[in-house]
Length: 183
Image (cartoon, one colour):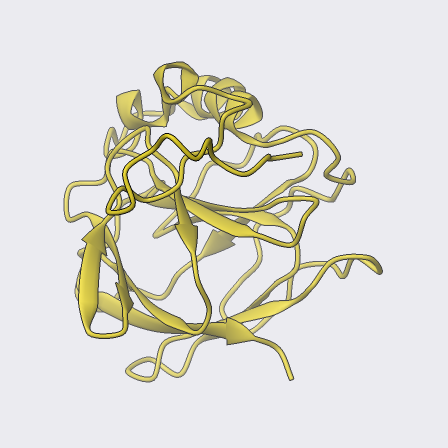
């Protein structure tokens, strides 16, 4: 479970989850490497995924398939108006052009449609915490991950999860996704 960030942080800094310090997030070591590094990613993502997430099937979810539902979790929709792809996010997910298959329990790999070839194989992780907050972390992608909220663009740095306020637009490579709570 993530706790709120200490009040001593600057107001302009994005909130950081204090339970797993940013130094322990090693996803950036593997993000755009096209070799088979799924075991290393699995361990790194396992370190990044917070306690309390229910075990899930780790099969890759294709374009218009929803991730398995969790009865207690909020559900969000990640929608790309350019490709028409919509993904229901109701658990923690690894997003990418061709994401790793072997993942820790509680994490689902979601394959993103990428006609621009700007989405990395393992691009970003979205984590839903027990308090209903949404976090996103870049996996060291070549073309970056960004959150656009109220006309401000926030770059999601490698190894530093950023809390997502919904609704927002999430830019993954050169693909723009509307991110909002399911209605």
